[in-house]
Image (cartoon, rainbow, N blue to C red; front, side, top):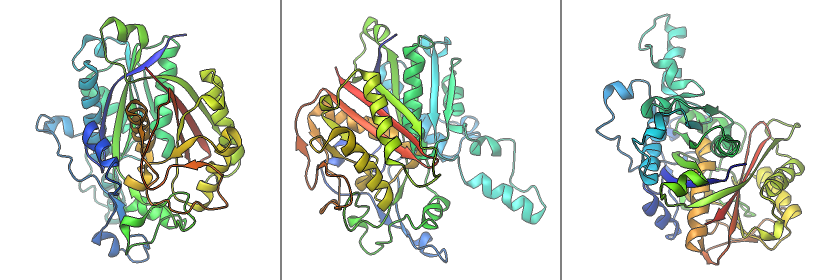
Length: 407
C-alpha cells in the first residue's frame, strides 16, 4: 500500500480566502456571523443569520467561457483548487493531465439559482433564462466536473453529495485512490454556496439558531444554552499525493493521512446514532494502526444542535475517554455543509503544525447531557501532538473520520 501525504491546500472562507489570513482569524476569537435583511423578509423564516464569504473576488482570468458552466459553488471550488495546486507546486505540471491525477470533490447541493429558473418554467410555461449550462450548475457533480474541466484532469472523478460529509468523504476516497496505487495525485475537498433555501431546510427542522439579536454569541456547540446551527459557505481543497512522488520532486509536506473510516447509521435519516459514530472513529484508528491514546486532538463536527452534539460527544467519550482535547471551528464560520469537512481538515493540520489549537467559540458551559470531554474553551491552547483526528457526520447517517500525522 502507498503512503499518502498532503502537499497543497487552498480555501475560501468567511475568515479569509488565503491560508494564513484565515488561520490568523482563529486567534481573534470573533465569529463571522451576521444578520441578513433579505432573510428577515421571508415570512415564516425564524433564522436571519448566516456566515458569508465577503472578501472573495472572481479572478479576472476566469473568462466568460470558463464561467458559463459554473455557479458560485463551482467558482469557489475551482479557485480553492487553483490555490492548492499552486501551493503544491503542481499548477500546470504535466502530471495533472497525464491520467495519474484525479478529482474527488463534493457539495451538499449545486447552485440554487438555476433551480429557480427551472421552477419558473413550470409556473410560467416559458423556457425563459434556461440554457445549455443551467443543469451543469446544479448537478450533484458540478464542483468535481468543473474542477476537472478547468485543470484538464483525465484520471478518476469521484463526486460526493453526502451533505455535511461531502468534503471529508471526498478526502477519504481520494486517500484510498492513491493508497491503492490507482492515482498519484488527487484534488480533493468540498464547497458550498450560501442560499436562503439552505437556511430554510434547517429552519423547518427547528435546527437553526434564532439568536438574531446576538449573532456574535451563536452558534455555541456543546453549550447548555445552544439553540441550533448557523449556515455558512466556503470551499477548501487539499492536494493529496503519493509519498514517494512528493519526495522525489522535493515537495513540502503538510501532513500524512494515515487513517480513514466511514460508515452509515442505518437507522434514521436525520437523527444521529452514537454507536455507529463511535464505530466510525474506531475504523479510522484501525486503518491508522493507532490506539485512542495516541490521538492528541479531535476536531469535532459540533453543529450546535441538541441531538447532534449529544450523540457526537457521547460517541467520542466512549472511544477516547475524557482526556483528549477537542474543539470545532463552527462557532467561527457556522456550518458550511459540504465544505466543512475540508475546511476543518485544513485547520486541523495547521493547528497541529503550529502547536496551537483554537477553542470552540461561544462554548461557556458544556451541556451535562453531552459527553464528558476536554473541551477547549474561551482561548486557544498550546501543545504538541503527532496525530489529530477530524470527524464529520451528515444527514442519511453518513459518518466520516480522518486522521492526520505530523511530518
